[in-house]
Length: 240
Image 1 (spheres, helix red, strand yellow):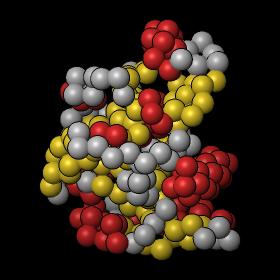
Image 2 (cartoon, rainbow, N blue to C red; image 1 turned 45 degrees about the vertical axis):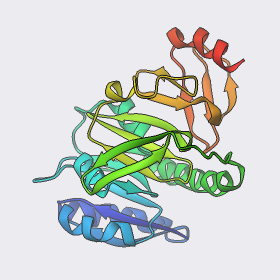
Image 3 (tube, rainbow, N blue to C red; image 1 turned 30 degrees about the vertical axis):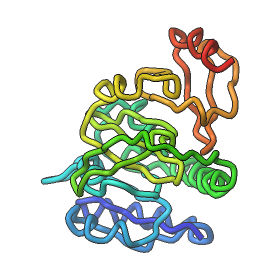
């Protein structure tokens, strides 16, 4: 049974989403609903949820700032918002999905199916991910402290508005309030490559390349990353 939480400052909106999620009660359970970001921050890390349905625009602290203050997390994120002014492609790279309010039932069903697939991929990746041991560490400052991570354990780094999301080999995600551009020089070596405007990948975690204009990479954690046409030739040289 998948576990979910909802964070939405509008009580009416959170209740409506909870009712719509009740359709999936055989496979997903909403264990907590938060209407205040501060309350969510106190509890989210301890709930053991699989997914957070996260409103973007909230007074005092928006959805991105909530993730930044959590610092590191293992759950997936599905953004929900009534505004369409955000760069959807960038948000989708950093989240499992992005749903416009009022949430469409068919789109919600698609998001739940994607969630189930991602959870299964995570479980299998724990066995298949390559073990890396390196003292080449990177300091990632967050609201709760500084994380020291081995570069070899970074699967990819994704842009999320003015933040960067580090996805690690143990399924943790660390949100840092710096742009991807700031980290590109730090990760500029044979191990990493920026394959499009929004993602830097660790080439050691590539398991499959699918042909296309730029092509698509499949990584060890199941993520599928599109390659820009401009980056394709360099990628081919470095992979093959």
